[in-house]
Image 1 (tube, rainbow, N blue to C red):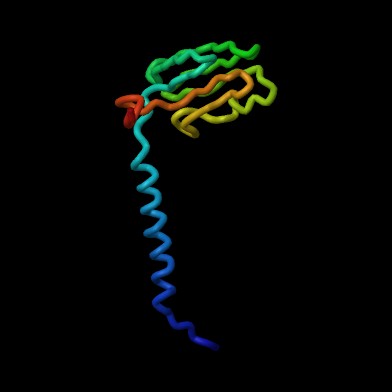
Image 2: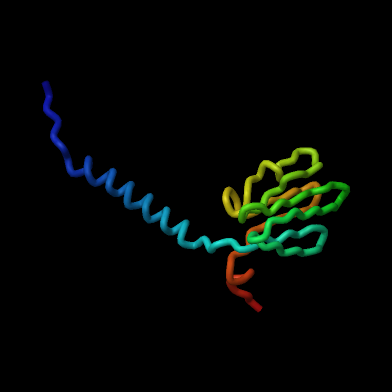
Length: 123
């Protein structure tokens, strides 16, 4: 029977993978700011809705209807009569995603971080 001897690479390789994945995790999560509201763009009109108040918003554009529901600190599209309804399955802001788009209706919803809308303005 052959006896296996532990080599330095057997220890360093898993350690390097753990350190790299930990650094990547912290780098990605540290950049996200808490979401306090969502911005809805529909046909050139901009609406900002707080995630603190439960409400339902109805948008009609291009012959389609999209209903955005704010509930429990999350926003999601609860109804859309567009053909594919990908916006309904897109998830929740800020839980699953940072933006929801209904292309046929021309409606987009995006997360707005707390403390402001823009990081910087170049002019």
